[in-house]
Structures are given as C-alpha cells and as structure tokens.
Length: 325
Ligand code: MLT
Image (cartoon, rainbow, N blue to C red; front, side, top):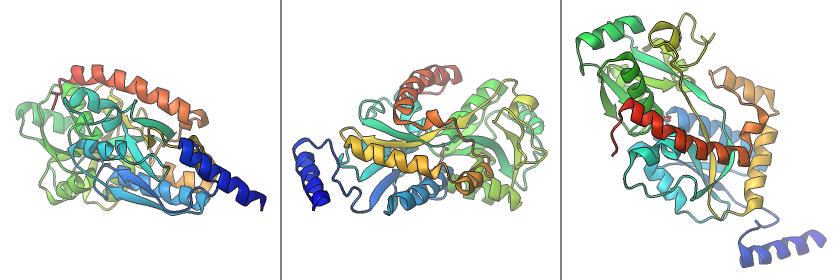
C-alpha cells in the first residue's frame, strides 16, 4: 500500500513540477537518438551500452538513427524532444563540441539545451586505406598526396564528424591536400572504402578492427599516443608522420533540458553498475576503446567537459582551416 501511495505522490508531483520521474520509472521503453547511420562506431558503441544499461534497468532501450549533416539533424531533434525521461541523445564530440564553430545556423545549443547524463569511454581512430591501395604505409600515402594535391579522397561521416575533423587536422599538419567525401555515417563510408569508391578514411578502432582483421582494408596508423596490440605492427601517426598528433572520439548520453533529475540519476546509476561488469568492459577494451577514470563518467563532470570542449574546438577548427557551413 505504502509504495502505491509513494508512486501516486510522485506521479502527482511530476505532473505539477515535471522535475521528478514516477516511482516506477522507467515504466516503458526508452529511446536513444543516434545521429549517424547504423553500422558506424557511434551506432555500435551506443547499441552495446544501451543493451547493457537496459539490462540494469530491466527495460528496453531503443536506438533511433537520425542521420545527416554530421549528426546535427539528430541532435536538433533530440533538443526539441519531450523532456520526460524517455528520449535521450547519444552525443559525440562532433555535434556537441565542434558544431557551434562549424554551422552558422545550428538549431540547438549543446550546453543550454541538454543536460549531461553520463560519458561513454573514448575511441581512438585508425587511418585506413582499401586492401587494394598502392599505399602500404603512411609515408607513401603522404608522399603520394604531396605529389598529387587533392587527388586522394577521404570518406567521412559529414561535416564535423571526427572522420572529417581528424582527416582535416591530419592534412593540415602533414601539409597535404585531400578531398573529403561526406556520408551519413562512417558505416556507409566504410562500405565505399572497401568497395574502392574512396581512397582512405579515419574510423574509430571499434568498427575498424573487424574490417582490418577481415583483410578488406589496411590500417596505416593510429591516432592514439601508443601502439595497440589489436593492431599489430601499426604505428601511431605521431611516431610515423606527424609528431605530436593525437585524436580520439568522445561520446556520452545527454537528456533534453528539463528532464527529471531522478531519470538522469537512474540512468547514471545503471551505467555505474554496468561498468562493474568486467566482461562488458573487457569486450570494449578489446576493441581499442579506452576506459576513463570513474569520475569522468559522472553527469556534472561530463557537463563541464562538454562546455570546455565547445571552447577548445573553436581554436582547433581555426588552426585546421575548416570552413563554416
Ligand atoms: C565520426 O565521428 O566519424 C562518427 O563517429 C561516424 C559514425 O559514428 O558513424
């Protein structure tokens, strides 16, 4: 009887203030919007984490892919969604930190329109060419690009995706000219890399690894600070072509501003439980995914990090000479 009274009180209070989720939250399936096409690293990371967090919540977490414009279309949809604790955004350094410096008419504010729920682990990237490419290492790719300005085309997941940004940073620091080819996600770009329609791309390790092991693409260099056992014999870009080069993709879960605090805390608590599952975290590190210090995953830390990153990417984009859209 008592729990029913509490549930009724919460429901009434929620109806009045919208600041408290019902006592039986989540009472039905939750949606996570992923602003890239299915099959890419963000989609893969989101589905893996959603599945494990859903087990903790004993509730289904549905992935809704809303692709286009480097993820800004899906982020805009999430910003306008009902803040009831049943719709969240899988955020990403591109459309949550670089986009304000890249898009002149961005339909959302990454900091004001969202509340951070929890950060995901980071993923370094790999410089990839098709298995039939004449470029056998990063030096031969740079030499070819210097001799043939603009000839090498690089697939990416749209303006502001890390496959776009990292390729632009690499080109600027290696003093080469490349031609970017935008797709709705790294998944479709990877298909065209394997098919020979694009010459090269940067992709996160979690989706690059199975394809390199399958022999359909070749890994030339890593954007991490150290080599990885998952990519035997593959050097870092910093050690092989561009001293000091380092890049990785960060992601995390965000709620539209106004989502009940209790819903945010419930999702974060489920994530903390998932992180105690060493089989779950071990499978991520096996894919080259880099776990963070526990405190970095927390809502407040992630909210502050997002705001800092928006500021930092203004300078990175200016230095790489990436034009506004
Ligand atoms: C990117 O930054 O390139 C994205 O992660 C691509 C994707 O996840 O599809």
